[in-house]
Image (cartoon, rainbow, N blue to C red; front, side):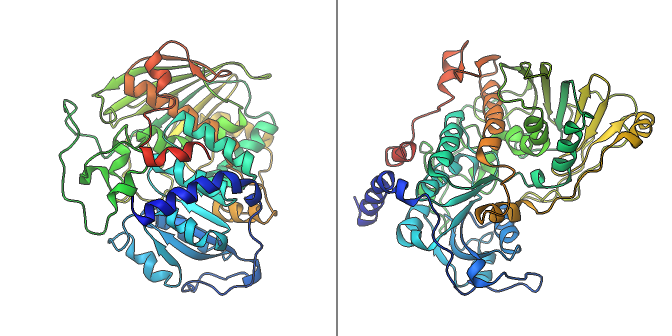
Length: 480
């Protein structure tokens, strides 16, 4: 065991005992800015800025860093990425030259934990859990990209961890701070959206794995590891896989072992407001109605999943039917009109979002009205147009958002706002997707007990709520 390994092990063991003393973030001290100030960014006084460490600094991680820095409410004090110096990470290394650099978040916390108030986690789905849990156990506030984690149990531990360590948390479904959030809440409060019995959710854009050979018999072959990449740390809690380029740089989303497919990627941008304001909680059944090109390694070429939710309070039972796949287009009601792509959707690392036959969104069916909406912050409209005109005078005024998602997170740490997608809100939503992925993976209907949080009809499916055991050196993250 190397000296670094020994230090990490000692550090992890200490986190359990020091967590109780670390629940309050360090006092905001006067400090200078740790980077180049873009002309469009006005920084708050130094004494009011939070010290932000960023885990994952390329591609989507880069967007998250700059969204937070551009609020003017934080200094970037540390940059952590397993691929430092690669093409996709070098930009932020140059932009924030005074930020300390790390390839391993464990070393970052070990060496400068007292200099950090909050962290952003913008790394692959399967890697969210250990970075977030360690940060929270040390009293650091966490902004974690969606979905929260790859397994149901990991999300459960993250929800409990946030409560135990009394930290501010935010899942990175940024549309949850935009117009759709405030409209949906206002319309539910005013009784415009009520008695909803069905939702059609759809993401029919081309995905990275579309066109792959669904008859594969093994994982892709071993390739040389790029010189800049710490592959062992990239794997984290996952079981060992030899490096292949089809795991890295966004390709991880294709594989059950690492990602959450189209559902985990887009579900939180399409179903977030319906899930929260219709108080859906967890489903009692998930049925893979259609899986085209199913295999045990990567996600299907097309999926239709039905999630069934029981009656809640004064709300009737509700079914959500999810469609993905380029040609797996759901039926739309008369008067639907044109499907538009939200211009605020951030592009993926492999190019721009491509318009589809039906762009990402949802159709909401209630007793008296039908609504259509897009993804992210896109607002709802009532259809058909004649009904929308009839309802126009009855619609309440919708307040404007006082802050974007990054500002909301940072202001929540300062006690000025309430985080809109905190883990207690975003966690059950993420767990809906965890259940959906299990149904996809096994190609079987699952029956779920939302109270006991167990799958009751399939032993293997129930075991997948926890998933495979982490590698030995990562087990301690499940105990902190």
